[in-house]
Length: 359
Image 1 (cartoon, rainbow, N blue to C red):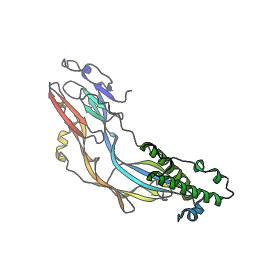
Image 2: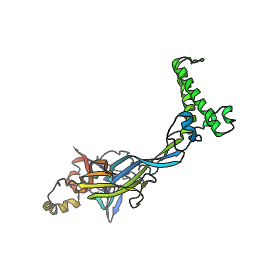
Image 3: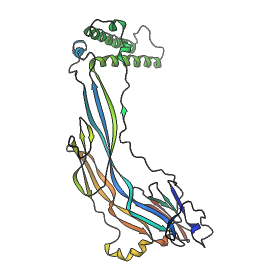
């Protein structure tokens, strides 16, 4: 079955106008009636966590860092830890299986052309095919490394490699680092014996010297690698106060909310209780008309906050379908006298715009 669904109804009803469509791509049958089955979305809150795992590896000459390079507090112990870099919070729409509707396609009533998403959520009525694909979820474990590994031994001289002890190797390596720094200074000041002919050549030479210096200095200072990863947590919104969304540990990274090894990250959701469009006493009188119309959502709004260690990671307002109401487009909007074009928000199920053109 095609993922993006077109439903054209003119071929289903006899006696339609000459301007009506005659092709039916896909039809859905309910008993003896032909029509479209579609769903409205419900809101989920998606928390995208960007975290990094840092791995420190001591350098081969770490114990000689202070003696030869005057570098203090250089650790000789491997270490691994996590940092919480950024937290994004947004709403997404997922199909609500409790809000499934069937639009009967018959003369003088509804929707000769409907477009649905891949999940069956209504996207538009009487509008050209958008070709929009459902957005992909962020990867739950998207790993990237921060720096390229360079073997410092590729820059060691024969004298360093032939040294009789580790201490002697460290001493000669430190001297080579100072020689590289002197070469860089000579190039920058224009005092080198073999000066480059242009700026591009100068940059290439300086980049190469910087690479050598960094690689050989890492033999003393050690090397820290950073692996950036992305995790996604989804929650169904309801009114809540400081509920645990997930946990975070500097040793283990992001964790499930039930894993007590991490510090909790809390989420609060406050229903702002925006006014409804129709009073409750008028709903019963509209029930018959609603059953024949096209349903859509009028989302409510919520104030959402995410906190960690008494600091706000996110705070703002978001549309939440479950806090709103449900309304219906009257069947009279969809007849042969006029063409009504409707665009829906597939995240909330709300209306984006309605255009009506007389035929």
